[in-house]
Image (cartoon, rainbow, N blue to C red; front, top):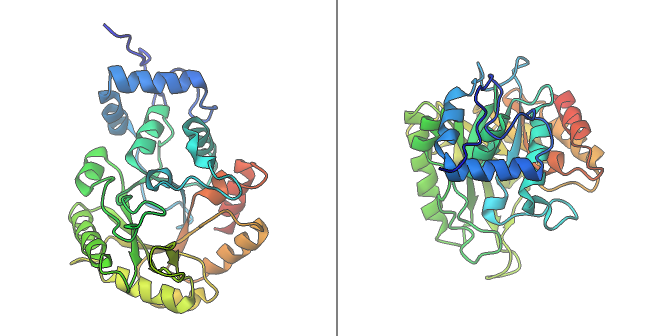
Length: 319
């Protein structure tokens, strides 16, 4: 009989991978224990989800949210700043996530099921708002990238896990008819999440291939394009009661925010060469009343100086 790696007695923040605190480094021993748990007792993931203490509200006491995003690898996006393979080391990614999630003021996390399952086993999701990433089929650089199939979390699975919502990416390429399929599937996901009483976080962009067919897909970050994308995303599904928007910080955020009454979080995007300028841009974007927080990944998990705690604390300070 394979050895069960769960401790015999589990306190509220205990993990199934040994006695280490959830904020400790994810060592090779802990990775081995996660793998062994997955192999010998996969139900431990469901049990950890059932035990998880849930937040009283989707935002913090200040009415603001700081969500750490880590769903990039499932779309083949591993780069962070100058490090092309930054997110390829799962133990390192998990260590950074645990460090970020342990900082005061961090309210939640966004990830694909594999990342969220690892965090459950590490005991790192207690009291956090958890969003599952739903469509990751539009692989970076693929010729079908705009046809962003739903290959990740489902509304039913998120409800069963006791998570708080699902996130979807919606790129709108007016020159590519495959956009219609993604648009339809996002509308269906918004409907299913609303029926389950879960948040539907929609991240829309007007996109295109300015260098010609077969070249890289790029997002249009002009104020006009973001306003248009926000309006389209806000209208998805039969009810917007549970819909949030996830939008980039652009020059005229007041015009963008004025396009909708939906709760909106600001995304971080790529790691900025000038982090101070990025923080200033986020601060300006947080000013409209319906902008409720930040949903940032690489900029906080892989800052240029590798000081995750300082980067996260700076973002918390903006709220």
